[in-house]
Length: 453
Image (cartoon, rainbow, N blue to C red):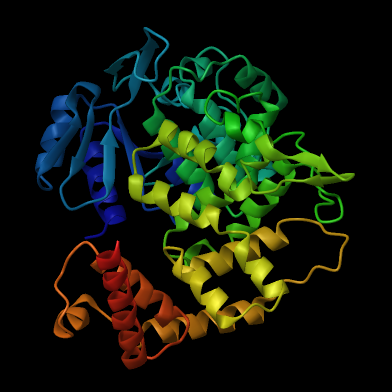
């Protein structure tokens, strides 16, 4: 039995006890937009919690996800089953609410606690009737994002970020009154985990993730959690290569380009974060040199800024390292390709990053995420061909530690240096047998030099 069939069975039992089951929230929104949704939320009206427990127990193992709040699930099914709730703010934090369930509250009051009108829609599980107390269906058709209640909306600051990511995902324009309300709200009490999750949704679920940051900019809400992004506003670029405007504008264009390739890379979220962060260094190193706007070494000078930004939001060290690594080398592909550099040079470049393929895709995103008035081509064929050469090369036999031991060397502190030397020979295309000879010769010379000193 799938989730929808189970939802219908639950709804039939609820109806026998005088209640009604409704699909609520994002599931109704996505269904009206013909978007497949794996998250199915149903809200049970008109039956007490004890009755709901009995109904759920008759279908399988009931899981309590917050019994005090009337939130349950059934093991093996992707359903969130809840009674309607009332919430009252008792503080400024995201979790500072007094919450209690009230199955007799009615659909109007239940929908009123939702954030946006497009999320306040309800659908009778059995009849398919849409309950729309706040004009959400019309707002959805017009792609307008509007808050439900001016009284309750400010109680949860996370709604500012949710609004921005909904605007990005569903191509919505935020209503003026909602933007004005969001400008007055403080995001300082939010947890970094919740901010990280909204950022992830914006970068991973939208084909135009730039909208997330443009909306936050319009709401004056970049400064608390995304100050490094805000600092890109107004940072000038050489108009010959960046006719689109400042670094913020370029970064937004790169984000939207990168979204085209995120399913093709090894770490899609890390890739999108790199698109966001890659030019942070321009905020601190842009200067006028001989009458031209330059940002020399921004790819390395910006690394501490990127690290600070990411550590503010997450402790995912592997992903942070991915972003720092890809950013450090993001200028190399276009530079080497434009000069037709040697295979040795491109092999070394690809060997310096965690995933060589991702570097090419990012270079492409960076190149086309701008407007240039110069004759500046992206040498895509060159890069993909050099990547193929590199990938073929690293599959060939190479000198390993066991080869040095077999040749009579004893493992010691020198091994790391010798293996590094052998690896450089490998990247230069030297066959394993010859590379081993040269490495052993290098070891003998070093040993002789040490004895003399």
